[in-house]
Length: 492
Image (cartoon, rainbow, N blue to C red; front, side, top):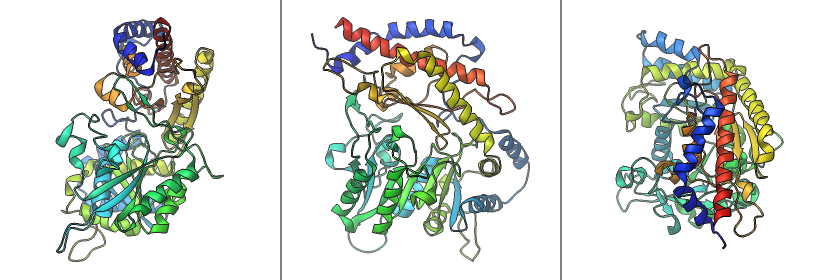
């Protein structure tokens, strides 16, 4: 009997208890100490489980919390650090999270003005159909209609009080499929998944340009992720290592005179995706992921668009006349507070002055992943790709190509959707957790491994044995899911 893809995922759902029992047994052979179970993980890049603070940041927080310092002074010091790296043509503002950077950017740069008589204008924002679009593509009504309700099952809460509730009433989000990408349906919670290893950057940029010109009068800008790995569609790079798709997006936006806004929440300021090379007008970051900072967001951009962003935050000049401020404005609710400002400043100084403190753990983690994969590689289906990324602060493991060239009724390693993670039906994550290792994002055949989730010691140095333990656990969990998929197919 031919088994179809949905039969595979139904089988995984029905056998999940058996799979997790086997994962628990694997965990015992892996040897995760009881004291570390649930306290070490594959990646610290998670909003609900922020990474550890670097020692210099902890010192700055302790020192700053006891000081009486005007916040405008700390904010201006942040600006000085950013300008010292990117040049005086760039500016910055600290907010209380990357999502605050998104919301402020949409309100200050992309949404049309509501002041004046007549009907409300509408704005059209063009967004590539990439991964994690529930963040940067959910601030407006998605068009065309095939994408309606796309985010209904994402996030902790559904409906008006969930992601759908932050849609701006006068903004349309034009989603554009990337050339060469595939969007098959996978998962127990079955939804389309963007498989992006084969993205054609030039053809994709042309498609995005065409979408922008459909209603040029309403075009407000382009928004895209700043993540630079092949699993996010950025396998094609220029000679200097810059993503061709990013660079072309910046050019397409500049040709039309509209902003290019980059969501690089998961990225690394200064060391990762370079705003200047890709032509970004504004980018924002989560400082508490791989940047080693406190729970805060950082917005960096060209001076001109940053004026409106800083005005919306209440940090750009007093009304009586001054070069900067720290007061009330439309988006004052995104104020980060003194400790977040002080910690962000300290983290940026480390990124600028001590880059090896960040780069060395990435290099070591990459070496460990390659070594541990080599030990198990003969047992995996062909098509697994491993990539180092400074911007992401670690290593990407992508397995979408295990599905390439298969006959009907044959399967690659099972792929779980973002909706699976929310519904707790991502069996790969559940297996890793049963081993005693905290999982992270492994949606859409893509896994990120970064140092920091219980893998730094008290001195802020990488604990290589712990990294090796969590990497081995992740690979064993992936192999377990592969083997169970094969078993289910064979038993059908």
